[in-house]
Image 1 (tube, one colour):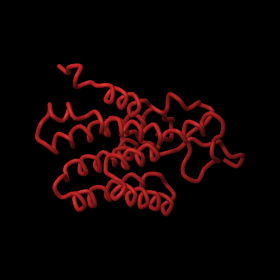
Image 2 (cartoon, one colour):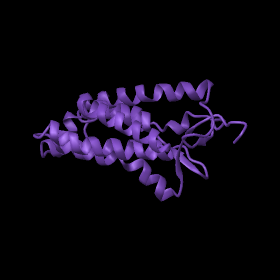
Image 3 (tube, one colour):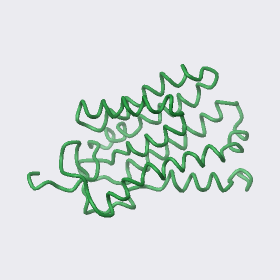
Image 4 (cartoon, one colour):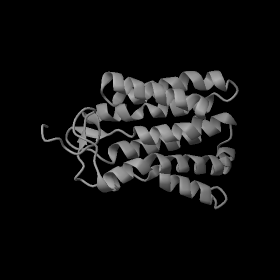
Length: 200
């Protein structure tokens, strides 16, 4: 049973921020759409979307500050850290992806993923991952390649830049690829809140 020392205020704050489903904050008036469909939403929706990477980044930072007791409990040195980071990231991206869906789309949490990667992997790994992920999404004009591209960069660069502590990078890189797999299992594409275009 987890004691009060393990569930410290850093962890509790991290869990609230990282596990809060963004779909609960987005109004239904901003339907999900593919990469090239519709226009950016306004009002409350755009505020939620702009603040999303900040809440994810703060949540990731809080987790790093407070996960020490959990890692000590698990043991196995860096493998314990990988288990904590991988599991929290996995649960977080699952909750974000499925928190908003319709008959055609699930939510594409690329801003959430990018912010978490910066803190979990460090800028040296995260920035190339984000750039390649965004470039892949722009080139293919769908959201899905972002997650595979960013995940692959983390899987490759993480162990290269930190050969002594490669386990967390493997766990985080694999968790990064979960959203498009969820979309496939749900039989949907990846979408983002948009204001419908008159031509669509």
